[in-house]
Length: 223
View 1 (cartoon, one colour):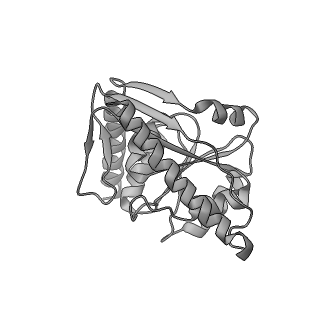
View 2: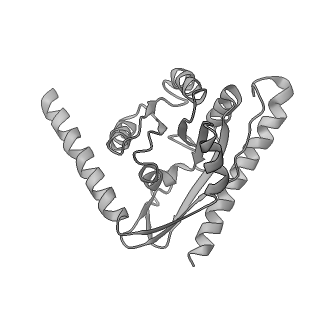
C-alpha cells in the first residue's frame, strides 16, 4: 500500500541520517585547500564541486545544511540518496546521462548562474565506469561560467565495498578524516563547439588527475 511504502521510506531516511551523524560525529576531521574556494564564495561566485562517486557518503554530510544542490540520479538507489541529502538540508536535482539528464542540466545551468550556488556532481556519474570523467560537470561549467572545484576525502579507517562498481567507501567510527579542496578550474565556453573540443578534453584530463592526486595525497597524510 502507498501509505506503507511512504512510512517505510520515512523511517529509512531518518534511520540513515541518525546512523551517518552518529558515525561521523565520532571522527576527527581536518580540511585543507579551502582558502581560494572561500574567497570565491565571499565574492558570491557559484561553484561546481566534483568528486568520485565512491566518496558521496561523507561529501553529503560535509555540505550538510549548506543549501547545496547535489545532482542525483532518478534510479531507486538515487531516490534513497536524494531523501538522505534532503535530511541534511541539501536540495537535490534529479537526473543523469541515461534518464532526465537534459532537464537536470537546464535546471543546474539556471542555478549555477545565480549568485553563490554550490552544486555537487559525481565526476563518474551514477553508474560509472568508476573514475572516468563524464561530460556533465564540464558542460555545466562551460554553459554557466561557474568554476569546477575537485574535492576528495580519505579516512584512516574505512569500509570499502569491493563488490560495488565504484568501490564505495564508508568511514568507520573514531577514524580520522582528511577533506581537501583542489584548485578551481574554468571550462572554455560552449564545449560542444569544434574549436573548444581539445580544450575540453584537456580539462577533463586535468580534472581526472586532480581528483586522483588529491585522494593519493590525503591517504599518504593519514599513514
